[in-house]
Length: 606
Ligand code: ADP
Ligand code: SF4
Ligand code: SF4
Image (cartoon, rainbow, N blue to C red; front, side, top):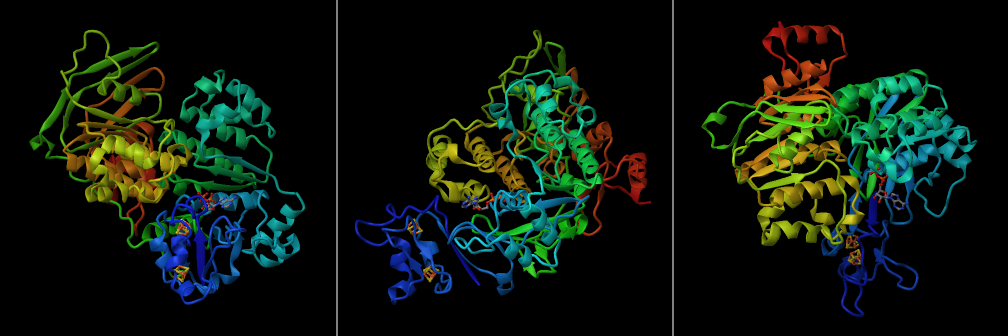
């Protein structure tokens, strides 16, 4: 079966042709040239061409000819003919199948952006009535219910059609919350406390300290917890959380996991999209992998137990559907990458002990050497001064009086934590401003545009980008800025799990090739593992005192960090993937006794 999708945001039929000629895709289609109608464009009636899927031979010539990358042609399995769920208009994105809805369980959806996760949620919420792949035909509920006969969805759609399902949903971009809701945090929470559980939620999510503040002054991590509590407090049947972990530290991520498990234990259905794989693993009971071609079609995999589902996602292969959706598996290090040998590298800077006092907060950084070519992960709970340290190292903030920083002449480039798209041009304009002529070189293409998947959005306006796209552009811009010291504050936010791993590799390779040095503040532990040569660990008391240790090797750093937050990771026996241990489980206690918080040594194995 063939799917032909024209991306109407990208397609510009008046720009891709000369005068009265037909658009390029039509002019070059061999079927059209021999009198057939594989692609049509009735200019009076249509804004964009349309592929006639049962006539198109799938040769792909139009895909190559279109100057705006607007055409997707895919051959997909015949079996999917009976699995259509929804199509956004003729020639629009197609969603195949739906996840299983299980009351009392947490279902995780894993997949890249643009693959149909929000479409799934809109359908479950009753905001979008599935058209079973027949746009314009709008099937009645009776037919939809019959279509899903024999599956859990039959009952679900029956209740939904009778208006008996209520959904409460947390959106992905919580930093926009203060634009929509005004006032102090507590009054918002009081308004949505339909289940009478807010008092417990405030305690479980450690929100007391900032309840009396205006939403506009809250940090991303604080807003995230408010947004989660505002959804959990609602009386609903199905709860959806889009990226509940962004901007939260690892301990807060686990607090959220506990709250969501309690919600499921009440018999509620909980659906999450979570790109931190360790947290998705810890949170979900079951997962569905969404695969396909972002922007063209998405297929919801069969349901899998969480361990097996995430392993298969990492494998890139679903044996029960005989589908390979990624050419290579994602592989984890069982042992830390070698962190010694830096002594022989060139020292970039040697920092003395740095202190900084801000109102009631004090930061102490023990100082230390940094070397050329290394990536230093910065880990620790929120409120311990990670961003403050970055700002001091970056020269934006002065340390306390009397502390002399080495006279650094380093050029610095920073990717801040929160992104505010305030630029009128396109992605290409924005990146060329810093990359200059090198933007058009093949090196830039292979080192930046391809790994960051920016080639297809080069001509999009910065202000129109999604959160994930903007994050990638900002990382790329930072890396393209000529500098010796690069600082990235939470580069993984809003980026899907597979892109997180490709992007971490690209950052690392870029830094090594430039012989520069990078500091990266990151909470996704798998990204920290992939990225870091050494770690700066923060401990202390949030909002009062932060202590930052000198950079140390990954093994010692992970142990120091995870010991502080009291969390251990075991390894999945088949893929080596790190999995969070249940607090107090036999393995958790054994690993803590052996001092193996992340990498497993012989002491735990014996
Ligand atoms: P995800 O949530 O996985 O990022 P979405 O469900 O938002 O994916 O989108 C999947 C595809 O469907 C995207 O290509 C998007 O542009 C398209 N799409 C979403 N909503 C509409 C709509 N109302 N009309 C046409 N296309 C849409
Ligand atoms: Fe032109 Fe591409 Fe649109 Fe065809 S799909 S009309 S080639 S922009
Ligand atoms: Fe025509 Fe080939 Fe494009 Fe199909 S894939 S519309 S046959 S050019």
